[in-house]
Image 1 (cartoon, one colour):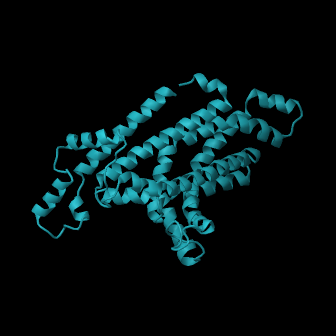
Image 2: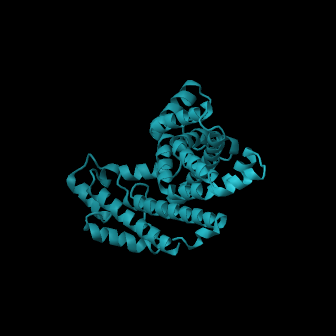
Image 3: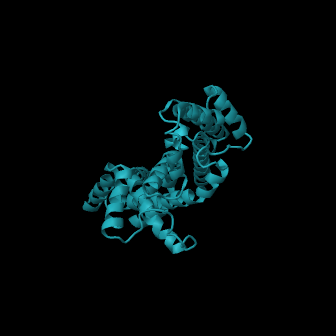
Length: 313
């Protein structure tokens, strides 16, 4: 696990460098974001020089990296605020959205996997597969737009943007209603894959020898599945959740931007568009490290559930 943590740190800084290079060679300029698109080229160059953007690429990245290692992510070129403060303001909202979705997704996929096992080759199993694949076929942003049009515009029963209504920021119920659509889209767009993982793990566990022994003892099928098969199949499912942490977080960022949810996703999209280097690099670094921590925690849970995995690297 120590090697895996070292690998995560390496990937985190490699990702920031790759992102920095892509931003450097992409179209656009920080000058346009600062409102200088109607002024002279000299004014644009003068503004970029004031931010140190006229320096060589490696020198710019080296300067950022040396500060980042000391915990200084710099100042946002757009918001002219400390990057750490900007991320801190939105961090909790993203964590609430992500963990709420993961919690619901975990138990929903397990429940559907158990139903598929209990009613194998039945109409119910086929119906579950059709519904899951229908949501999987739509990109998450397209599914989000469908939810906004139907529940927000047509039925008008759910708020379609923001984290809370103005003046109701401290109202827990109001914040929960703003979470319903983003969480639903995140869960449904990932449900097919995670249900298939849970289903496969459950079916493999169900074919083990100890299951036959349980039947020989006269235990019912439901008790065997809930008390033996489920426990044995948890480790692969949890491990897969950990492995998908980064991609799930990126999906959450996309959903946040569609629903104008006040999290890190909105900040990321805005910063990429306006080439706000300090914010983008800090968000990439934080995202990869968070995904690494989540994967590490998933591995610890798997080892706790199955101590035989302790020696597996």
